[in-house]
Image 1 (cartoon, rainbow, N blue to C red):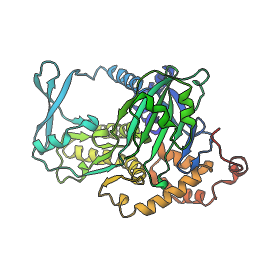
Image 2 (cartoon, rainbow, N blue to C red):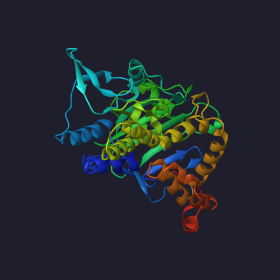
Image 3 (tube, rainbow, N blue to C red):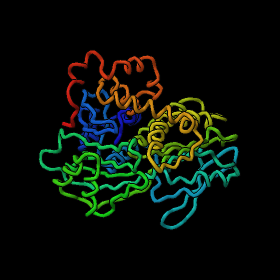
Image 4 (cartoon, helix red, strand yellow):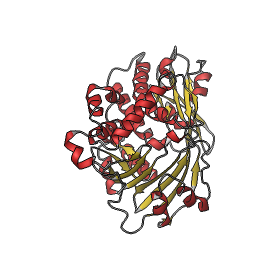
Length: 406
């Protein structure tokens, strides 16, 4: 899922990407018109969309972005190559030592700037230690999230125009959370993912998938899966902890090195913010590289990249710490001393957002990473919150009667 905030940045940097994705079968899901969601606080009313997400298989997205990038003759791809260690010293990184995956041959690639975008598996901490630099500050918030994903063929009539489905857990019941989503993909397929927090007993066998779906807070996911043809077995993953490094806090940071994407801050995938956060970082780096890049420029760029990761970090971690058995190894004061106040405010906003179009739009603007999270603290937003759930223009049409998923 690529949120609209990230999709717009990708389009800025790589024009035509969205058009190619949609032409290949990706779906543009308008929030909340094209989405049926049971939130922790009830069914989300389906308002006319202001934000969207592009949903498709990850291989399709990766291939189209990769193909678009490699059309630039200035870019060379070294396939079958592993980065082994950084070259240079504590004051300046001058390149990367690489090794061929097939023959094991080592080679030095010299560079004015090295960008670590190697993801959750980044060895940055080891590389910096080898340069004689002290360990970076690190925060981890781990709710024990695990995922079981299976691809299905969507039934006839349930492809074009059929909404995405999202059943969330309710953190307030104080037991392990269980989630389920049905997301459309290209080729008339559904990606169905069931997930849980620590202690939720993830289904890892094909025969356990449907029974687990029936344990969710509503049977809608199970009912849809029961009538669909499975195309793959169940694939399970236990990589869902939120982890963030703080290179901007380091006493010294070498020139010639920046880190972004999941190498810098990795989030619980359930919120769909990882790719959009990486896109934000790429735009920051693009803007910074348009300026003179002399001594100290890498640190300045890193500070701005790290700042771009802050909103998705807080959105993911402040939600995850609400679940039982979450392991909070973070020194961020917003996740400790002020957590109770933050949770109370978040619950109030969530309650209002499911029935007020104006509040829902403001929250979705933030969730889609289109506007900063600070928007939820503005006088404008507080005035919306005082509208008792509905602005006058929507009160009679959208907030009367009983909420429903239909």
